[in-house]
Length: 298
Image 1 (cartoon, rainbow, N blue to C red):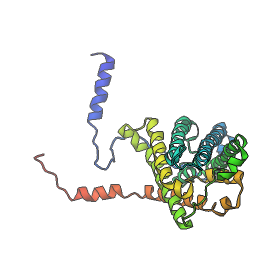
Image 2: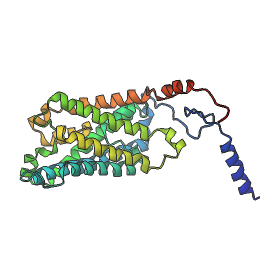
Image 3: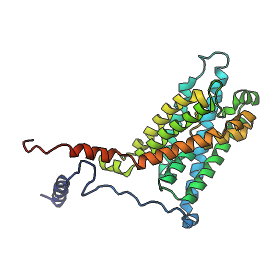
């Protein structure tokens, strides 16, 4: 047997000898949970990688905003005469979900691929980023959203832009502010929870650390949540997206409802962070397992 073959055989025997606990508490783990990020890390301001990540977040937010706002305006213009014309609600949702999938896949290694203020806020609560990085990310995302909406307005007929509401998020007639707020909270909770689950280091131990398996669930989740909330609020789910559209459109209706698109996503992100941190699944499984006795005949 060659040295490489003996090394492979030794490694295989070591792996087979590992003891696996039913609760995923491995005596020998093939993943490592990183330590919490410091709350305040002024040293980050002297690192070029931070500014590279900020540029990445700004550009990604502007591209996402351009696709989302342009699709919404196009849908409203095309369906103004015939409700069956245009891409439809599902088309708008596919555009947002598909663009999110592409941007997260391309930018995860550079900035983490946050793109959303709600996602950054949730990761801050989970101590995955420092306060300084989180605040700078949020500023970059808001500026990127303004830039993306500005490009839409600058390349589109002014009358069509204004008549379709500038792609701004507003509560649809017939729905109350409470309903809209609830839709934003629940939608953002689902989205941020999927972010936490997809980026969990323990997934590497189960072979789910392929980059596509991080961005693909986010794209499909945004599609599903967007489909559910678009008829109610236009699917904000991201304060930067709503802020950028409101700044460029700058009409009273957009600003009157604007608080919903900050409070809702931030509360949803907070709820997702709390739930994921205190998820009782392990304790519940432990209680169930304690109720069973080993059967030596098995």
